[in-house]
Length: 207
Image (cartoon, rainbow, N blue to C red; front, side):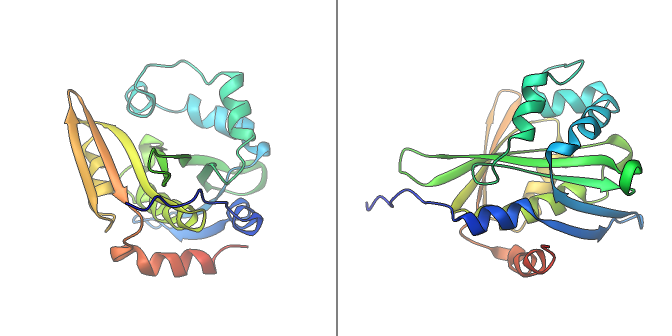
């Protein structure tokens, strides 16, 4: 087997990801902005976390947390948009802008030197089931491909059927393995499937 060389993400790809911004309309007609997270989002992230219910927090972090630590907030603020990428879904504008969802990935090299990434999502309860996670996944997949990522991996609670449904309906080839109460999910980004049109749409909405 030929092992591919390590991928070097271009500065242009990182800049494009850092400037990502798209406008979308949810199933209920709510207008949302999907954009790259910035260092200025620190307080918005804290407020968004504080609005989450305990079960939503557990589904995302696999633990009950009362708050995000300063280290976690600093890590988010320092995302380089090469190995670490986060997109947020927001409503409102200016000082009234509120984060209602987020999706992120952390990329690394697998033993065969492919770039793979761990992906995770969280959506505020009042906006779950409206397509936010699916839209975030589509845009993250587009950004990841531009950075040479070939696979998304995720750890999902077996009882978290809505999140598993998002992965199943992504149009990406999917493998899953049950390990106790956790499902290990892998999505193949090299086969664009039903998401091919999304890449073009996402690229057109970057500013």
